[in-house]
Length: 288
Image (cartoon, rainbow, N blue to C red; front, top):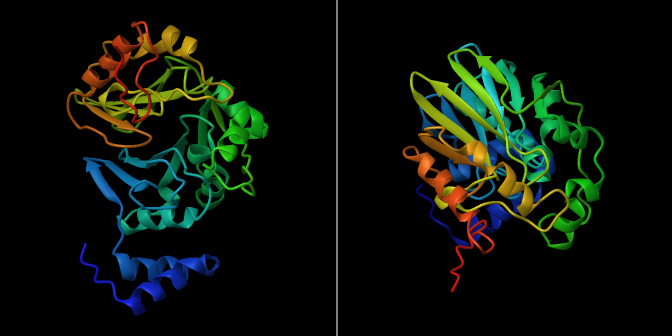
């Protein structure tokens, strides 16, 4: 990315980003300055939103797009602020928004689910979620969503309001969905939240697991101190990620891998058998 900052250009950029209410014109201007594009991860799979690498709003999780041949599916929706950046990233890859048929929601924390309502409005896609998360998506309170703790922790501003959205389809653990050239298996693994889902995409022997915040790169887990997060649930359900022969591990945050993804899952499984609290998020704390 070739960007040369001067005092004038830096001021101009800040002014542009400050006036975000300008909508599509601001999106276009930001692209002219930063040359932002979606990121192709692997065949058929793109990252179209991410706060960490600033593809979209800084509070967004990694948002993935899958081209399954007969249409497009999104994995998660971001926080719901500046959703148009995600939509524009999809267009920049040459796709039509009308071809987004499904939004597979992993869980109902705001950074993953806050954008469901807006994306559904813009695309008329079907929102898919597990039973517990579907209930939260439609009518969960701030306490049930873990949003109260997240606001106190400075993760979201105090004035952030979660946009509730009615899901179109409820799925359960082990259920399979046929999406064009992919077979998709729902793997519900409570622990990060009560109904967290991973989605296993399989095609011609290659397996991609969208693991959300259940397991991250290097086997850390998404244990938190909010309603619905439970170490006991992690211990009880993590075995559902055993023996999946996962190639690509694409989590909701941080780094990902395109090979040997199962090794990272196995590490999390083994850590949860030990005597101490397992490494979580990016905290790979040693125990003595």
